[in-house]
Length: 253
View 1 (cartoon, rainbow, N blue to C red):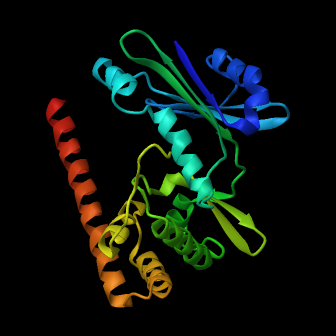
View 2 (cartoon, rainbow, N blue to C red):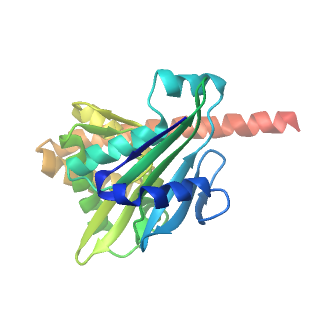
């Protein structure tokens, strides 16, 4: 059985959209080919769209995604709609498709409008001399503050999940990979913790903390120390995991 949910603006393209799903394995252009998920681009009615195919869930999760929890494809679509309703940029949600059998979910797809972007947040980390880097960071902070003010806790607020588009003297920020979010009131501690995955340098932390303090009317020292500590603890945790993994692999040889 298939569940097909298409945004009303794209309902007239239902046949063409479903053709992309039917021929997903043999047509389209790869954007990302990962172990878990695959993203391909297609042209439909002169417009470029992205189709994300989620990895087939294991037996237990297959049952969960059919009977208990919404699939990642459905969550991506619904969360994207909530973001757009709050004037937060994300590739426009077009549709989601779920294929199930009597037991559980077999496959799922999320379709969104393609965004031509100039860079993602990772570039700002790896290239400290990137043009207008400080300006982009300040505007990104305002974008994140708007997220928090709208009670949006983007759990995957990591460097690869923010696309950046230069728009004259301003920058637009688009969130992607949306299936992990909470919609909740956030304390300042939780807001700063939300930024820990960005792998910020101390200079980046200072710029973001200064801007966030201005926007939130919170003391700079409080914002800075919370963000610095959250970032530090996250880096320590990731580095410990990496060291453990290296030791484990070394023992196996």
